[in-house]
Amino acid sequence: MSLFLASARAEEIVGEEVTPTWGQELVEKFAETPATTWIAVAVIVLLGAALLVIGKSRKQWNAKTIAYAALAIALSFVLSCFRLFRMPQGGSVTPGSMLPIMLFSAAFGMGPGLLSGLAYGVLQYLQGGSFLNVWQFALDYLLAFTALGLTGIAKKLPETWGLYAAMAIAAIGRALSATLAGYMFWDSAFWPSLVYNGTYLIPDTLICMVLAVLIAKPLMRILKSK
Image 1 (cartoon, one colour):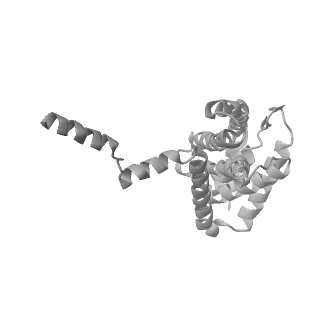
Image 2: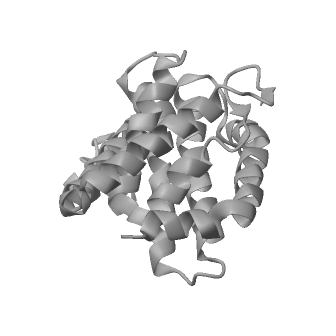
Image 3: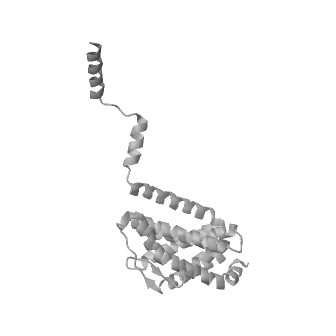
């Protein structure tokens, strides 16, 4: 009799629906959220952080800073028109098109550098870019080229190697943004997208570094002079 009751109770428990706790429901909702949504949120956060840094640097803007920023953006844009090698799905190797923005950022700091990179990104889009939606535009152009302003951290690094380390960090930032755009919007897996972007960004960055070895010191003295 006791065995029969135990069996009946077991069947009853199995038949009951187990109500998940609020914690389990929260985890399930997080797991069901598409990766593209998380990336979109990350883009908003990163752009917000960039704008915050730019906003705090308003006191750094004077006639000299504005003039050099305009010159750096113009030089970068002109150099980007000369393509040594063009990739089939966007991106190209240029004769150091990132260098003027990078040197300006290293001389005047991250805030002015980020804003100059942002303006340069808009010009890159106007040069013949693709627009699928606002997130693709933000990743491929706004965030990718704003990342060049990260070279401004060179001001806080040793003079001997700080500029080159900062240039590498800025290039990695641009590569990651372009890679996420390829993963989200151009039907490419993450790693193939990273390899694709590295194919042109690595030689482009190396060209910038070689040119920096030759011209960075005298130019930085001019840029930093009162």
